[in-house]
Image (cartoon, rainbow over all chains, first blue to last red; front, side):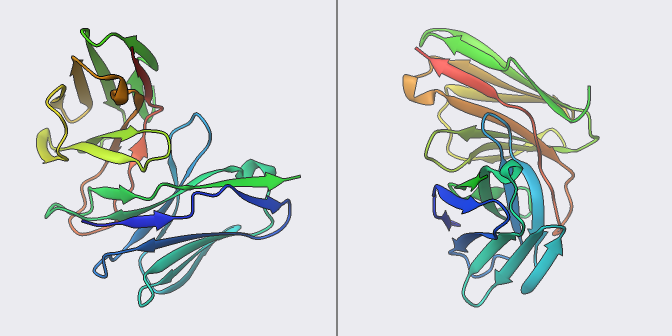
Length: 114
Length: 115
C-alpha cells in the first residue's frame, strides 16, 4: 500500500516570498510524482510532474525530487495571492496497466498574504 | 462541451433513495475514474475503467455501483447510502500509457449530501 504524507497546513506565506511544500512517500519503488493544485470548491488540476532526481522548473514552480530520502517538494517563487490553494502530492502505480492509479496525500493548504 | 463534465453538480438524497451521478469526457481518453473526496481526508480512488473494462475496485461498498457503457461515459449508481457517504465525488479521465506519464483530468465534481 503506497502512502503519501503531507503537512496539512495551513501554510501562510507573504506575497512575493518563496512557498515551500513538502511530500514524503513510503514506497521506494515509486518512479514518478505529481503535484496538483485545488482551489476551494474546484477540482484538482495538474501543475507539475517529475520522475528524475533533482529539480524541474516550470515558470515560477520548481519540483524537487530526492529518491534516496523519499521526498518530493514544490517551490513557488514570487508567490501571488492567486497561488492560495490546496496542493496535493500524488504517486502513481498499483496495476499492470501503466500509471492509472494515483495515491494522493491529504494536501497542504497554502495562503499567500498580500 | 469540453474537458470532463459531471452532473448533477449538487445532490441531496435520503438514505432510501436511488440516484445516479454522470460523467462525460470529451478528450478522447480511454481510462476513467471515480474518486471520493471527504473533508480532512486524501482523495480516495473508488473505481478505474480502462477501455470500458473495470480494472480497479478499491474495496468500495456495494451501495456504490459503477457503469461504463463506453469510453466517454461513466456513471455511479447510488442506493441506500449512509450519511458518512456525503462527500465530493470526482470523475477523472486519462490516456492509458503503458508504463509512462499519465495525466488525469478531473471534472468539477458532484457535491453529495445524504440525509
